[in-house]
Image (tube, rainbow, N blue to C red):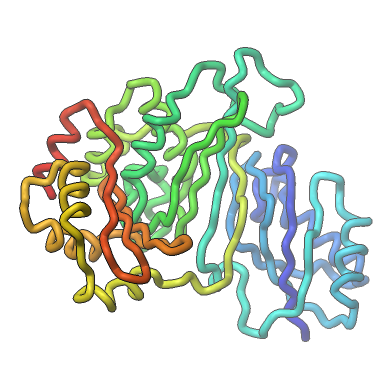
Length: 343
């Protein structure tokens, strides 16, 4: 018996999500029937990496399926793509280890939420992006996004009934960025897992921040209290895409950096830069940075580490372990004072 690891893409507009349902058409049902027809067997049960909601799309969705067939992987891809409808496509297929499970082996997921900001709706993007015909303040949205990076309790960013399905509402967000190209705004979020409707609520929260309906301090309080009323609305499903599923072990940059914590150093210039940028009220900048790193999410790009938490990022040279600088989004509201008091 083989265990096939398969990546697919689908336009979810015509489907009631991925997960099979008794009274509605889903991606799982369509794919299982195609496999059964291709291999001339009863449709097998496929195990998906995620449960996408009605109308949500996927650019790289993974499932695994056990089959007793010698069909080559390239033959599986070609055969499936002749049998599947035009809004579902098999991207790749490979033989996986017997214990591979598309859901439980996931190391990270990345979602994208697309917003069309054109004054009039684009009929060619119908069901493919959320139409929001108003200007967006990308700078303010990114300031709020930085607050959500790291390990937090995201209870305020979860639909109520979703909380009973999970043991904990704590999740780690590795990155969250907002970019705009022409009329299209893209919110990209990557983390170790997501709660029910979490990405759509995060996107709605960032829009509320752009509009001024929520402040950065509201977002911070939402994280601290779990109060759903302090987060934004749940945006519609048509703008949401499961962008990528990763099964590779994530480089533990934080552990790597913490192992050299005693070697961490800072120059006088760097000390003043960090202190001024963060408005720190302590002279022990090095001590503050060491303590900050224990609660930050750490990534590594090129020659530098980037440690992010609490709305600010500390940049450290990976070779010399010298703190270069730190930055926080310039905030002209009481939240800036609140953060300074905490650090």
